[in-house]
Length: 513
Image (cartoon, rainbow, N blue to C red; front, top):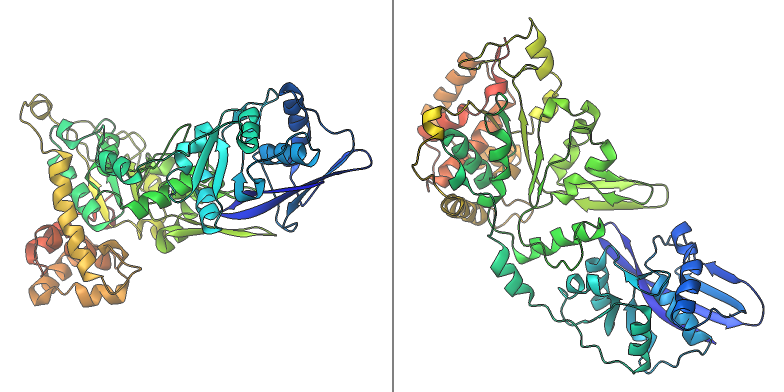
């Protein structure tokens, strides 16, 4: 007898429907065909033990499992449950009241018949709805994630026995319903870290406000203990809230990477990723024999924070250059090519020198001649070219730390950022691929960032006297456009341009001696 149901395989952040067919006939041995990997092949042992410990048996006949289409490689252990159910129906140990063919079924089996959570549930649920499936049967721990998708019956089960009883009609399991919009509205602006907890550093807060308002990349340079990491961690709290579409995109990526955790639903807050400087190229941009998203994709629609930037391997930093420009990363293998979105804000921090005290107002730098420049040269020019703001962070004085004056909250700053972003949305409404000032190409910078004769004179003087490089020109104009947006001004004024010029520390000649 032939039994059939459906599963799914995940490629990049999308899923493809897989047909699972099982037939039991005269003969011996268990055969699995359809390009399964080792984890899928090992399901024979898990399925047999689960059947035995649940009161059933593995047929002592010829069992053929086909995973179609046969030219797509199947990986992982999530095909255990559909294979087990098809074996039971095909060997006539159960009679299904509900058709297996109406459902996507996924789940890894323990030897005692319990179900373990799986990865990539959200894209699978989206594909199931697209294919017109009636429902999705999966482990209970993943059910809330799948229930984000409406118009699909999400059936969470704890054990294989529960799944059997559901299909036999002996158990009624109500589909899980999640109010996605309610979850989203109640959590999308709640952050544990807030700028109201930070005393002093008003100039750095201002720089981060500009960074958030224009979607710019930024680097903070300062001695140890000046507060660079603390300030960076609070940046997501002043970014505009995620839209529902952005939240779904972000959740899909984390689902594929298995980073959501048990009983998780929608990611409603902007992600903040801070990988250690020992990270490899593949871990940062994604990869592997079966490509998985890296840190730059996990930071999609959020912030990627690289602490102690010069300590990262140069090759690791260089692989970011293309994703920073294209806002996506393409990973090619011999038999496949997948694309992961990577639209993130890069925030980096670094000490000004190996000892950390170059340009410190009180402590003396002990680095030898040329050491500071050599340290800064670990960061390539092309990478610095993609960073709009260079911010010098100085230590906070005792008077500022001990002050009882209440600092401005993240919510107050975020409202100004949202208004600036709304101006940009209106400005770029005819260009769907651009929605922030940081994304403007050079030709658009010339069109939208006119500065007049007085502004040109100021910029020419600044470039001559401060020794700013040519690459700083467009960056200054983009940042000044964002400062004007924060001020509610249609035109870039002299004061906006002057403020933008001060955020180009690393472009100054002889900055490092």
